[in-house]
Image 1: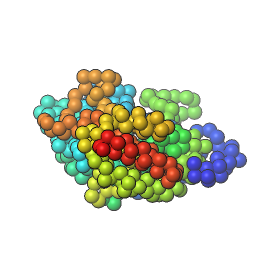
Image 2 (image 1 turned 90 degrees about the vertical axis):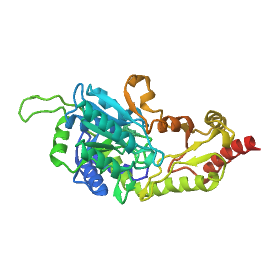
Image 3 (image 1 turned 30 degrees about the vertical axis):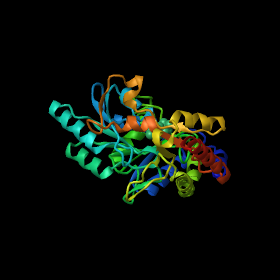
Image 4 (image 1 turned 90 degrees about the horizontal axis):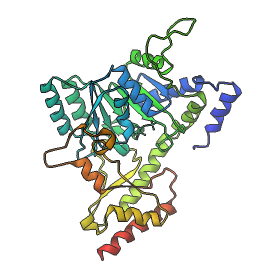
Length: 372
Ligand SMILES: *Cc1c(COP(=O)(O)O)cnc(C)c1O
């Protein structure tokens, strides 16, 4: 927490605005919209809810297809199943670890020949790094496919000077406890399409028709953010830039201290992009480093240091068994490669220099012991 949350929470209690919605929600929406430079934003109970509403607004229904990055957290694709639609997973490319334009193009060509183009494409910005949006937007425009930009992990990042999350028809952010800023749980749907977002507000509050009695003609959800949590979000947003600086410092320290070790390759930052470096991630070439990812994770766990593998690609998840998958090329399966060799280091904005030194020493000795 930033230390200023209590002020907004107290204000909510003092004015008795406890119920969902209220002045903090309105203000938080305006502040996020201003921060990233879009017309409007809708505060929701989670990032997952935001993706679900976006699909709903794009009228994705039973039997429709939706393209989605494969290397991501399951929440990116779960809403495709909520709508009864079929996910088609697209591999990563090595420069950003995000959606491969090459694989996307192949998937679009195939779908077009088949006469079954997707209703939407969910493009994820992993660990704060933007996908190759120019290439992806160009391809999607060519085939008229609306993009939902999953920027749950990349709030505060930019691609060619433009804020992450603002490249599609819709963008989504998450304020889950593990994200760069948090409301304990929450999300935001953003767009320049004010009419669509008005409809999102309607759908997110049980789709209640204009009538004195309770009348409903559309299927709705209970997806709005509470006025108390929006207060937490406002004070968190005020420190977002500091958080980005802190996470980038954490990354830089790791890079300076570990970058020279054999077999370690840090997640790149594409030219003209600025990552919030939500998590410092790297790959390990097990032969050069002399240590497997598994052993390194165990060695760190023994020292009470929590590190994690990178996301398991969704096309490998039992939940999505049988889903179509497009690899980067016939010989390159980038997301699987990253899954087998990737690791995320402790990267909290409040990670102390001493704690970080401990992580660096642990990794260094695990690798040098083996190499010697
Ligand atoms: C966290 C996350 C989400 C989901 O956000 P919630 O607020 O937890 O529902 C979606 N996509 C990605 C890539 C995430 O990391």
